[in-house]
Image (cartoon, rainbow, N blue to C red):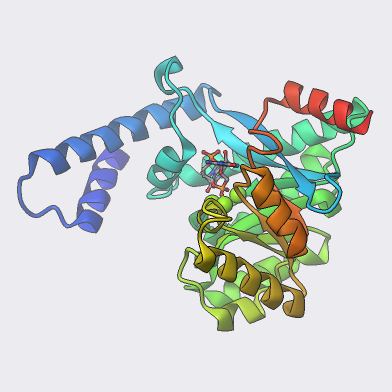
Length: 286
Ligand code: C2E
Ligand code: MG
Ligand code: MG
Ligand code: MG
């Protein structure tokens, strides 16, 4: 009850609802409903993961998978993480979800290896609030130890927003984890409050170009110019680049011409259950 009140106060403060508005009230009610359901879903272990394959642009080889959280609200309709993750992120609920996702994904990854399913790398999304939690580094270490996951095969996806506040702290945390072998990707690159001076200092290994720059290729010349520019910059700064949301052969061919390293998207595969991912890999690797 206490944190329900806190949630309301916070969401009101942020949205500046100082007057009565039916639409806004309804939206707030819906968010509160989602928040409460999500909280009990975590307790009841109702979240699950799908995995989207990531490939080499040049030869299609599989280089890893990205874990993506899934949830059927009320046991029925799917609700997108793009909708419920931001709600979780307004409170410490995101910390519980984040640890659960990391644990479940690492456990599955180790399980695949025991089954002889060779997945080279596991990418896990880390939200900004989760990253800034004081126990973040320790909780990653704990999960690695508990699951037996090799840190060299773990890649954490963060967004540019982690360095907007507490840049020194963020860089220190990333460096600590990098020192034991964990790598980092900057997710949704290009749509955040990109600051190139921070990017220069970020100890990340990879940039993931946001889907919005890929989706209108080959029809939007500005988007193509942006992708080319990001690739040139990344090359000089020593970042690998993954293109997100590749849906067509023309898009893949453009990325081949531009010598982009990696891609993921519906053109190769949608996110798959652990079971289907294993079949996908077996089929690919023969
Ligand atoms: P993201 O990390 O950028 O993940 C990529 C999203 O793009 C996924 O959506 C994926 O299904 C979708 N996608 C991949 N290829 C294509 C394509 O070719 N076309 C289109 N239209 N979409 C494609 P999803 O799974 O709905 O996740 C949305 C966002 O929610 C993620 O964006 C990420 O920011 C967040 N999210 C998902 N799982 C987690 C999680 O476990 N923890 C955290 N903190 N955030 C998560
Ligand atoms: Mg991601
Ligand atoms: Mg994202
Ligand atoms: Mg993304």
